[in-house]
Image (tube, rainbow, N blue to C red; front, top):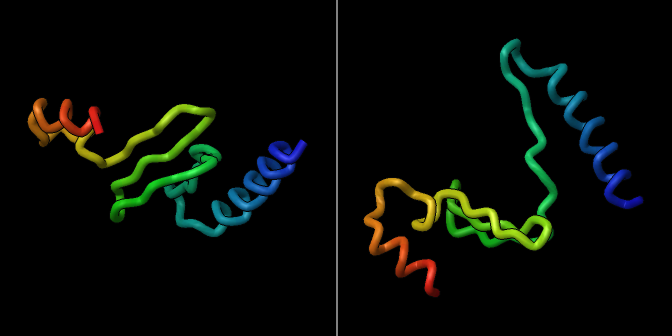
Length: 75
């Protein structure tokens, strides 16, 4: 029930924001996350439905060496 209410509010918010954005620009809803860990802008990890979503950290960056990624997965 609460999730439906939240999604309805999100959809209403997106409609209001998107109608005022320039043509070709659109704000999108990616998901609802229970918790998050933010290192810096564009570098974070979030928990969604007991799964960890990682963005910008060493585990998902293409410019980091494989050994660095393996080491970070262990800790």
